[in-house]
Length: 75
Image (cartoon, rainbow, N blue to C red; front, side):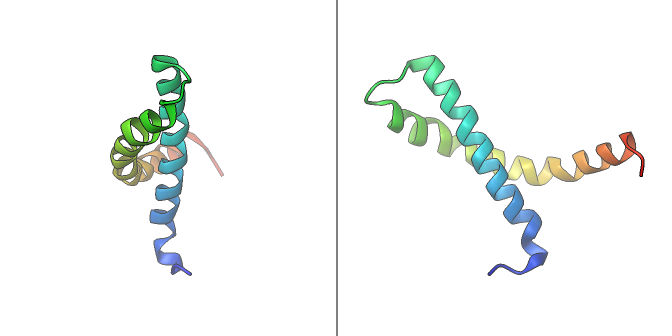
């Protein structure tokens, strides 16, 4: 098990992985179609590169988003 102090990093890792998987899959399918080469284009050509950007971006943007949500809502 991972210590709870790393929960925000694990959350960002999983969230960025799933979101980039979905978005890159849709984008790749729309741009190139669903054929036999689709899985390789999607995973290697689109998803992995996008995840390398998405993961650090989530770690940077999440605290800003939390503060913004806190400012726009009330208890």
